Structures are given as structure tokens and as C-alpha cells.
Image (cartoon, rainbow, N blue to C red; front, side, top):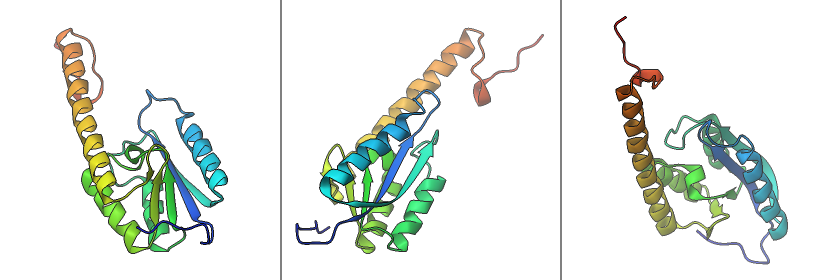
Length: 165
């Protein structure tokens, strides 16, 4: 990706923010957007839109805000996507790689508040770490649910067991 110089016109930016579960604060998306808007203002970038998800895991690609962002890239509505960190964009390596490919094909750059411009190497490493975290979290969640079931407590959802009365 080519980074714009001081003589380039300001970036047209779309901000993306996401939080994934009810256990996180609903203000998380607003906080992420606020931080991104401050960064864009400090750099002289023009925010043209904001896409977000509330309570949706980053391992799914059928998120409405994520799909709208892909459409924005394909329509070249922006030349930079701004987000807090790569794991907000996706927790799936395949989705991250495809997103990067679409962005670069449409001459858009990616910028994470926690690491700056995102190139292929940074994206690959970050998405690998995000996927590893997702796998670890899923394992620990299943362990916790099994423990609740073993203790005769409800685990809710598909982990509930039928109890004879």
C-alpha cells in the first residue's frame, strides 16, 4: 500500500468499530468511534462514513456493517479504513486476507489506532493472533459450560441437558 504524502489530498475515511458480546460494554463502539474520529481530525482526514457492529463476533463475515464496508471499498467510497485494532475488523484469517485483498485492489489503505498503517505482514500476524485468541476463548467457554452442566446448572442454549423429572 502506498501511504499518502503531505502533498496528497486528505484521506476519505470510513471508520469501522465492533464489539462482540453482551459481556462487553455497549459504549465500546461509541468509544472506538470517538478515538478514530479524534485520530482522523488530528491527521486532517475526512470521515465520510462510520460502519459498526454491536454484539456480533468478528469471526462471522455476514455482519451487516462489515458487508457494507466491503461494498464501500468496492464502490471506492473511501481510500482509508480506520479502526482501533485488526481484531475489531475480523477474528478470522481468511476474512482478514480477503478484506485486505479487496481494499488493496480498490486502492484503499488500512489504519489501526494501535499499530498504524496495516500492511500484509502486520495483517497476517495480527489476524493469526486474533484467530488463536478466538480458539482459546471458545475452548474455555465450552469448558465453563460443561462445568455448569456437571454441577447440574443450566448452561443455556445448545449446552442445556434434558433432566428427568
